[in-house]
Length: 224
Image (cartoon, rainbow, N blue to C red; front, top):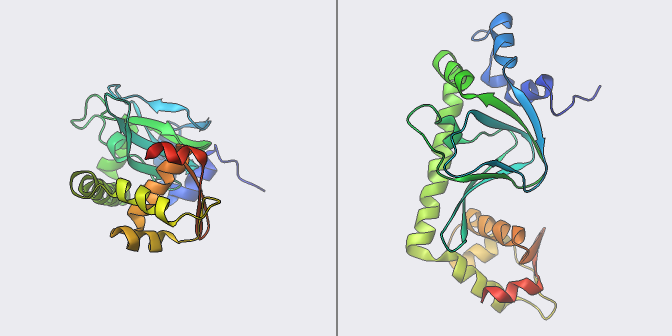
């Protein structure tokens, strides 16, 4: 029998390790699960706007959520993405010193998520060692991503170098038969950085990513 994505069974199939039986006996576990709300969000749906106060934390069951900042001139910069089995570290900070949310949170593609109320998150953190380990791991990963992003912006201007490299490598048809690692070697950065920038450009309609290649679209030339 197929488990529905927006169900407690599906939630436990992905996040069950955070709620082991020795920490959360059945009655105690049921009280937690009863507070969860399951939502399926279409691509582009806004989950949280900058300046709002979050009352629940998304735990992604399927799909992808993007957390980003927008400048006064409308330029966007992705802070990080939340994918299957992950949660939003900024939202996890709600109620613990974080007032107004400092970024936008949007479903990048059709996404199913369990929304856990902030009070439940606090209980999970206070009473569950496994959940605390998960939060610390998420925090460490996101901090590393944001630090890398700061380096890109402040010191490297990697996006500009990558765009220039793509323009130089493309064939007349706009096809570039280079892997993300090969592009990273051209630009002098990591494969992860290149993959993140390419994903952003794809979402903006500037190019199309395929396995082992990138195809530049007509809108790409407007970047230069």
